[in-house]
Length: 89
Image 1 (spheres, rainbow, N blue to C red):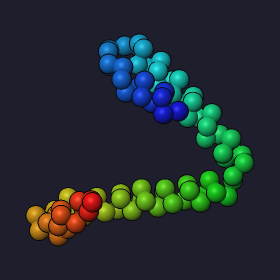
Image 2: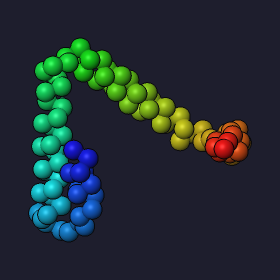
Image 3: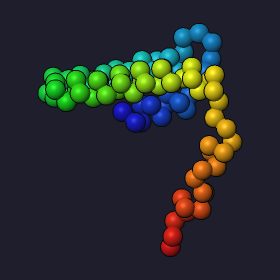
């Protein structure tokens, strides 16, 4: 599944129906063949994952207009000190 996605990204785009579009169709078929059995075997788990995904996407959709109206300040991005993210070896 990862390999078919890498092939899709590696091919250059050209106008019309070509190799990139065929690679995308193959990748979509591979993803579908992986996800379809999961929906049959793990119904409640897939429903829970779908609800969480819908909640995150819905929350982002609600918050997006507010971030455009009230943009974040520079101080907001400087709250975290970059030194604390470095590995201590």
